[in-house]
Image (cartoon, rainbow, N blue to C red; front, side, top):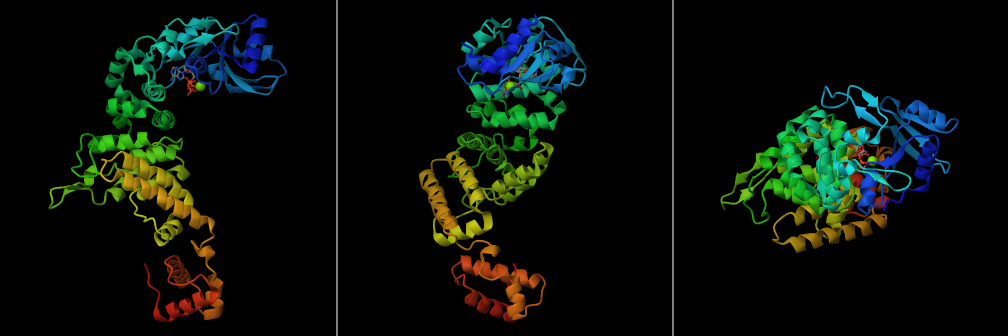
Length: 452
Ligand code: ATP
Ligand code: MG
């Protein structure tokens, strides 16, 4: 049963009263039929944008995508709905955008342009569905199937390949055989697609509850987007810590994190991308990956740039990769040092990365490692809330004190002394008290500050 909300019913009713057909359509119908609360309700109608403007004359209308027939209309309760004229897409010359769109008067024409049968169901105000491609049956059989010929549909818009995988990752539905074969045949089409569109679908894929199976089945699609991951496929690790090849370890780690932070997902996706290039075999015959963290950071930079991440997200993902192997002991001093270097927020995020990483390793000491992450975070939270001295600004002296009290010449040496003081306070060598700090600073100034 599709429970259309009042605001959408109001807009459908107004269009119907003016003599036009109108339906809710797409994701909201699909999700309702699956028993999931829809995120938003899209409306489709036989009215052209000009006709819609007449129906809703004098009311709040935003011309969202007028060229493609989309207006955003406000209900009387103040919610906004996207309303789009029935349309068929013109020719796709570049595998990305239709050259033009043509408005049509029947809903079936509009449904035929949609990507998958489960997304091509319309529902009117009375709750009657228009379902010319058998979407309801596919939903109950848990199948993702292209509307029409898959090769043709992926050829029109290569992003649909990734959309199929993200729906599979979100729902756990199986991709129908012809659609699946066509996806593998057409992986190359993704190279025509803009990075922004890829990023948004890939993010949803990674966040999907069933992402692991998809990432394992469609390695060709993953490496079409991120070729840097190709060497990790089948790359055995030959170590007691690991029982999977690098690719499978990575994907198990991605899957093991069940939160909704996309940066953590991408950090896991790239945390070991540098491993294959760093492999060596020790005298004991075991595999090692010395330097793989730095190599993963190095490879991640251009990948994140290519996928057009914001600077803030790029920085967060890179930091998570850079410190994913950092050793912090569940002891005060070690936690304080880590807090000073990373801050609590990054440590919390790293806790998620580490746990996901550990759960994708062999069972060798898994529980002990897991408990250690929790223990470290417990101590770190306590220290952070105790107002302990962790940063330069927490020190009981500042640069001015050194210059005025000790006659230190302004310049880089001031910062060096302060950093050294902070290190000593964090390591419990001196208390964070003005007298003790000044005395230590005097000594450092006289005898030279270590410069590291
Ligand atoms: P979500 O719940 O993530 O919003 P959705 O199915 O609503 O999922 P949208 O991207 O909002 O996805 O698209 C709305 C509808 O438009 C889809 O259900 C589908 O019918 C159609 N659609 C979207 N993108 C495409 C595409 N690239 N090719 C064909 N049809 C598409
Ligand atoms: Mg939607």
